[in-house]
Length: 340
Image 1 (cartoon, rainbow, N blue to C red):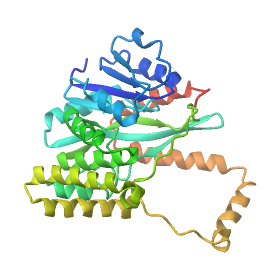
Image 2: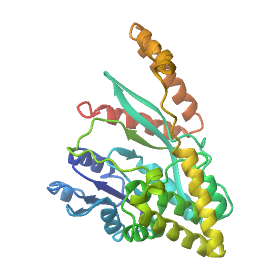
Image 3: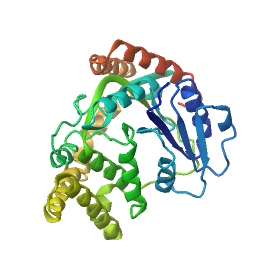
Image 4: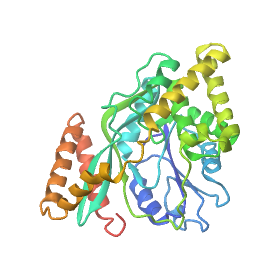
């Protein structure tokens, strides 16, 4: 049993997914906290001994997470979307790594994205841009600049509970945009410490049909940072991150603000760049390639073969137990034939 980490699952109109997820963790020994904003409560929550269930239909996403994190009593926590399937063993390993390495703020491992092509369930590497390096900068300033170079979202990594509480305390005070929350959390965890990517299979991101009747779309952080509608929210964002950097590095506020703004400029350049709209003539080669591919009978086989090679290269550094966990995950997800 793992007594140093809690899994927090925010969910909204996805009870079919939630039931499968809770079955996955039922025998893990890890405490699970569910924050559900669905109109109707999840009827089967009481059947799981390791689950604490909260029904908050009136709360938005940020308020829901803030309320949930107050109930976490373990030193480490991991956020777990109901379509992001994190391996229990990996969660425990990451929490134990953080316990042994206090200069690290988050820990995770290798991710894959899983989707179905016809009857074939296929996995591809995901969040692998940092080649399992993590963040290694020795100062908060170094890390808040480095974090965007090979950006891997920190949102679903195992993290210090106190760090998440700090992020969400700030968020409920002036953040409304969910993408701004993700950037805030990435910046603050980078400022707090290094990040580690263990050579383990961490989890699968399920690419599946939408199961909610709602289709919420949030402005990207590039809009938050530049559009006058978000002027007050963005100013609040900069103020709070600046205050934290000032506290950690013992530098004056003006210098800290300059460093935070440089980090955001780096984020906008590397993670929010958009290519100018191309003319029909410029797009013609792409259209011709698509037309030819319609008659390519071996396209699917080559596509899946390339994916297999990519996966072999991706998984080569991982431990043998991790590869078994991936195989077990694929078998489990393949049973979701009506939902993935």
